[in-house]
Image 1 (cartoon, one colour):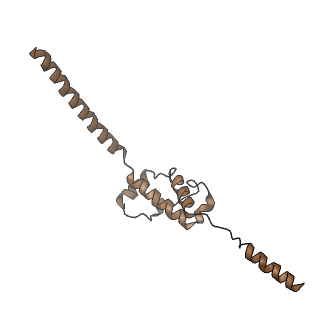
Image 2 (spheres, rainbow, N blue to C red):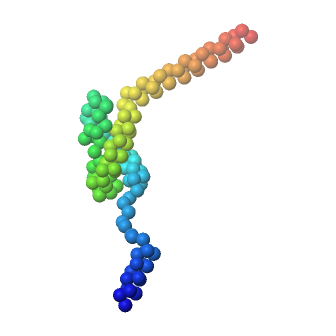
Image 3 (cartoon, rainbow, N blue to C red):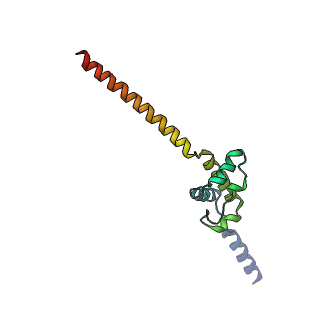
Length: 130
């Protein structure tokens, strides 16, 4: 009886692999962090602080909060927090002020008006010479 029990135990151990709970894949955690960063934005005072020291990506300004995450359990995951901080830093680094957009828009407007006026001038000169 003991031999049968031992042999069946060994057979079961050989056939059935050990089942372990697998942690979430790192890729899915990082994707979740990138999706959560879409809701992240620094407000004026915080953005002014950031502009003074743009090199500090580990600042507390980029910490995920309960308002910015989809799952509050991920706040304890270091991979998630690091991915969130990096993505939030990069998003804020690419952010421009309203004045920047007015300046670029004004320059484009002036260039379009200048080109249009040159075209109109050439058309009028062509009609005048006929």
